[in-house]
Image (cartoon, rainbow, N blue to C red):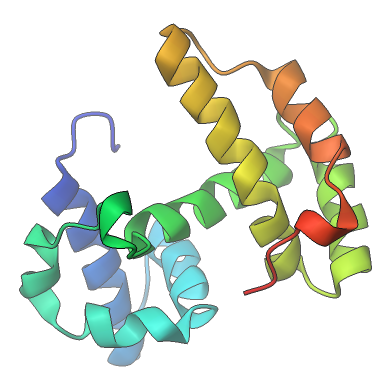
Length: 149
């Protein structure tokens, strides 16, 4: 579905899900997943409320602003991985982290750095992500290194 989508198209998907949720309209399955992530991040709602203005917004690392769409997309990716237990073992790691950190959302935040590093390594090497390295990163998460926001 997203293979050839532009950045603006992807962001429109988030906006559509937010608008439908706000209007209490029925959501498609993917929209419901996106809406759940948005609800877990109320700090992004004012940005989404700007509507189409957010389609062209840049969130460059050097600006010090986190990209909310990347952040929410990583939540969705981790939820998909956990739901399918792919790579194998990720569901158990997520469950352990959720117990340790007190919520599934906090576990996802803890897992995001490992996912980002794995994707970055794959991009630099121009290869598919290394699932074994990803699982090892997740297994080695130190209690003090987890984000809880």
